Length: 231
Figure 1 (cartoon, rainbow, N blue to C red):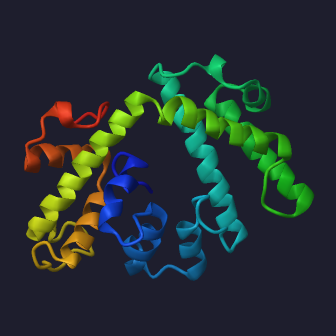
Figure 2: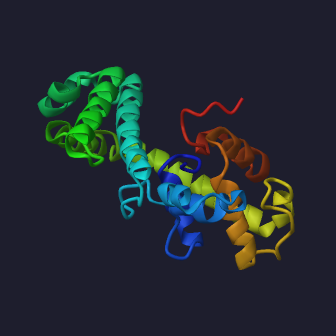
């Protein structure tokens, strides 16, 4: 899954990874390597994002669709709860296809996938719901992700995570034993230390990252991402 702060964590960690940080490929190629998972499972994890090549198995394709359905619906629900948008602002196409509540939206998109797969023998979604899902995602980008408040939140995530990576790369002994892969101390600020720091910070929860920002960096709560309980 995503690192602390969601998608903003990829922007935060990308400068430290050749080619940029992608949570899907990092998870498959680095974090999960010790588990000796089969090729098909790793491919499904690596390629579950739509920016990646299509997965090699039907199961992987289902996961890819499920990922998009889940984040579109849940992000909208969170934005409604936060007062950023209201259900009535959804485009008519979206409201007509899947309704305005998370339960009705999930039911509509999942049912459409099942029917499309039964009818065609291929993993997919019926055209009406597929068009609605695309419009729903675009609505979220225009009205949630690109808002000034959302951009400010992303900047606070980026500032925090980059500061943590720099700190851990300068003090690699702090990562020793923090996860099964951290069993030796890399040279200070070496490529290996930064690689370890990216994995260490990228695997944190939102709350733990904020707490480490306070404990290790002296970050005041006003500098931390909003809406995260650090008590």
